[in-house]
Length: 110
Length: 119
Image 1 (cartoon, helix red, strand yellow):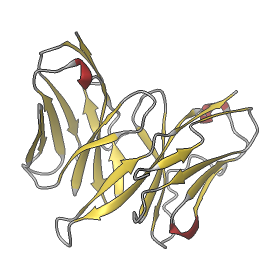
Image 2 (image 1 turned 180 degrees about the vertical axis):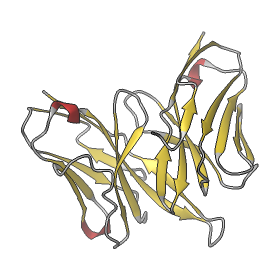
Image 3 (image 1 turned 90 degrees about the vertical axis):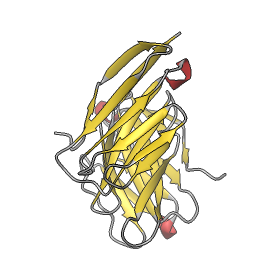
């Protein structure tokens, strides 16, 4: 069983639509990171959230850390074809140990 | 180069052969990780090095897998007697500590990976 449950597993939407990806756990994390990965490349860090209730924005992407630091969401507004990729969340526990969700494959159609 | 580098980028080997995968972390990063990823799925933790401490090997799937980190920098992941189920992308990451004391956290940066195919 995974420590972090990520949903949905797949998402196919039209350009311009909004979407939300969720990462949930029963465990508390000291920080949570979101990555985007394109085929043939390593994951690229998008953001780290640290404080319960924290909200961070990166252009059209909004990241939220749950109040209890057990869950997080990534919301994309007006998706673009360039947003296509695999989105991964990773929670940090036990200082420097990271637990990854299973990933969300996003396909944004023109 | 400022990022994590890995070599080779692709490796094709025959079942039963040994392979070595190399990772050059970002200079100054004290922690180094190896992960395995199958077919665009999530990452499976393999092993973690932190400074001079004993490595956390809890994710290694069998005793055919081993890793070392020389001089606190470059790391090599070795897979002995490869099996077809070892085929995957092997990712290396290094991390550094952001902030101080309470509220500090670590950020990981990944290399491009080595795609291993065992025939």
